[in-house]
Length: 194
Image 1 (cartoon, one colour):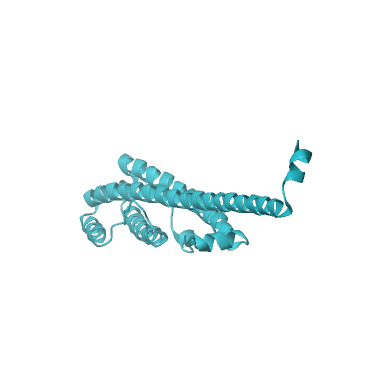
Image 2 (image 1 turned 90 degrees about the horizontal axis):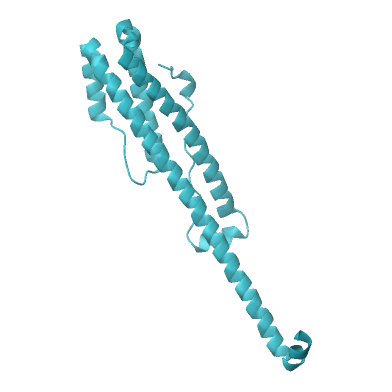
């Protein structure tokens, strides 16, 4: 069948068919690259949102323990209330890397202060409610740590697609740019597990 049709098509017709096929292949490739970039970008956004939710839960656990601490140590409890009033964590439907990093710093400072208070008041440290809330906090601390690693891995994949040729050409044409990583926490080794 093809051998019958080919003699009927002129050379210029074959050229146009080849050019058309190349254009179709290029368009499909661009769509494929764009879809991969959007997918990776959404994975990054989702990872940040999960971290934000986990940070909020950790913050709530800290607030619960601060309220318990206030019962045992009136002065320290008031100091915590001042810290809470001045430094809440940022909750946003679309958190940024800067907000996540800022929230981590606030949570570190609050947990370090709460740890210091619990060391001065053994009866607070032995309180069952305080211990359970501390376990919840530690569970979410671990979940945030794992989510941060997942986010940074996802950003690596996204950034590779944005930076590697030929996808980088499509990424720049479509407005995709490198994403920031979550900051490493060099002070983490110094933070006690309260």
